[in-house]
Length: 429
Image 1 (spheres, rainbow, N blue to C red):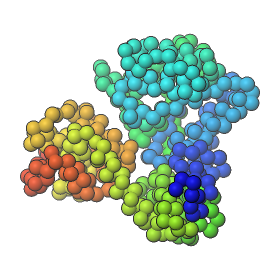
Image 2: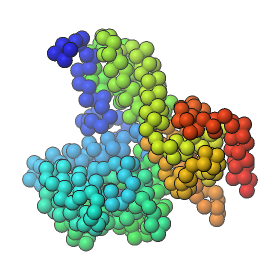
Image 3: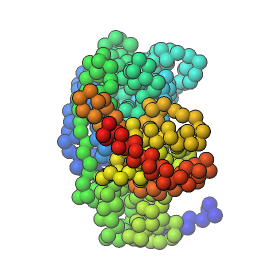
Image 4: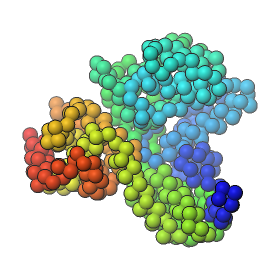
């Protein structure tokens, strides 16, 4: 079976429809201003000067990682031609829980890039020792370096003294060259869907980081079509029906202009055609692939969640589903109250409100929920607001497959009354 080449694939260069592929500049669509800004900010590196720090922000799938990846790749090549060693240390903060883990991830990333030993254990030594190892590696192997911290706002950590972990990390990295811990030129690029995380940053960190902002708006349907057209050569000539690209773009436009989802769907339709031995990708492949993506995303996510995360998600979805108010957004204080009620009914452990919010925010990285920070007005404080991108009732149904939650599902009327009582208290209290 392995030796059998089988039918010819609809693809000729599948890498072009992999979301993490660094593509050529001419393939980048609708991001001329952002590309120009990032190039101008990083250009001093080529002239032997320190570039400014950057904050790249905008919704998921709007090209932040794409642009910074494309520009830094070109700088690596230009620096190599001059005998300069430019390092790109790129990590995603979403799965990282603490500052200590983040610093270890940075050490590991540098060590892998330069082909050497990590040099420190993951546990059993201080965070300070890990910082020292990071600086040793950078000083030994790079003349200049940029740290790219994707989804920086999710690196909250334990929030000792109310200072989130990302604040401490930004402070240390952005001042490392000023304190001579790093001998070369250092810049930090923070990428986020929620720029309001800067409101919680420590004053010293804000002063030290002091970034130049680059905003990435949603792609519109026309731009999404152009993005896909620019990757059409991933497929064999005449392997795409005429309506495939417009349909993929239309689905992605409905998902808040997310180019990553468009590319995933484009690739998925081609994979489906290959699986069936079809020589042409059709609208049917696109529609079926979209259904599978939606189904697989929610199923795999729910199956992999801990019980506490399932309860958090269920309580949040219950507010969106049972709310009598216009719209289905969920204020985090209300979601947490319903979460408390559910845990009491189940006689389950109860997490803090901060942990509840962290769990729900994690779901935004999978495109199931969008998050935004809201204010209750003067003296009222800030809170997170969650909005489901899909059907919250369908999500609740999937979670109920966890037998511990079946009892709650049977109390639908009571759950509805709890939800609306908490919403009333929140909005009128």
